[in-house]
Image (cartoon, rainbow, N blue to C red; front, side, top):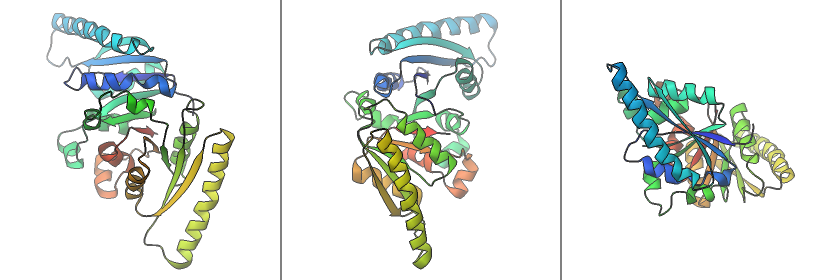
Length: 283
């Protein structure tokens, strides 16, 4: 994992536009220095002159948005492209070599995703870079949405099942700027159906792996603690968020699609819809 210095912030000029811009003003606390404001103009059925006018109008609006972020000490670049929103945002992330993407989520249900679609959910599933996601309804409760990012590292939860994707999330957490993480909780969920020797072995194995991760935190001078819960992963994480009043979660994802999520469940997708703090999702 590398430190996050440059991020892509997709803008759609919706009513929630100012909320996500205000939120992004807190990005310097995570080490971000440069933001690419991206907008996709839908051109289906439009002729050349109208497309050109819409692109020019989008550029003008983005330059006004850029001033909001520049006031927070960020350098800003404006990019307007045409085509399918998710495809073009994904292509823009690759072409500009950003370290992460930042966007808000309207927290649609799984059924809503299947029948209506959700740009934020599609972006996350197709992601090749970390995505920092926050619920718009959470932003609306904040007098200054940027405080959510400025305090992101105060009480971070990093769930781990000791998989490769979880290892990526942990690496991303300890690569945050020195001093940004005030406390990190390593959380492991054990199948509540386990009993007897199987449960004992699962607990012993978890304690061993968690101690190794704690040692890595200590090397980075990051205060840490461990939590082992007998619960389904998503329930364990949401409970831990509530108990610790977590300010941020960093979680790995295996990129399941909407149908697989309905059948199997997806921790990262559920956190996007229910977590009471910003979530950094690491592929």
